[in-house]
Image 1 (cartoon, rainbow, N blue to C red):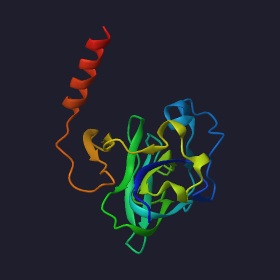
Image 2: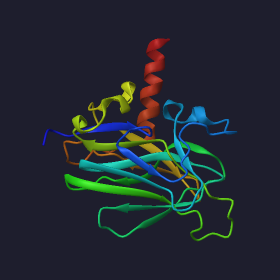
Image 3: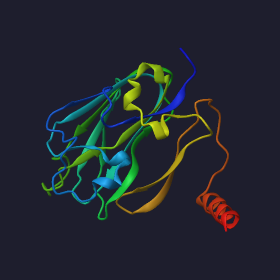
Length: 205
């Protein structure tokens, strides 16, 4: 297999199979569509709806939103046991890692996201789950290139990182996305980012 890259696939990618009542276009009454990457996402409010993705490669990250009307969803990866996650947050937050597995051995994999709206809740208004985009360590040649956003087609310079704010505490939790080269990343903190931004602004002034 060719060397791996961190590849970003938009929610509209033909590599993702949606089954059920997913809304990938209309999003009626949602004024925050623009908060999603490329202004697009797929959303479901029906228990049992699935989004399935298969690939040959390594680690994978699902990005979406934690929102006030979101509920539980599950992830089934290969032959592993199903895992449940709570997508609800009092305040809407976007561009979040909703699932990550950076330690997968390179090979063929299959992952299924399921809307579990009726799981572990007495509030049946918390029914939504969404998928904004997927990042995966893989050879990009296996995917339809038109579904890879041009502004982030292949991330090969350094190691991408995100700050995910996870419910229920709202505590910022760093999520490390490993590089395709393997090995451990150096220590990294939000102070490093702020320092870099401050230096850049100083140079621009």
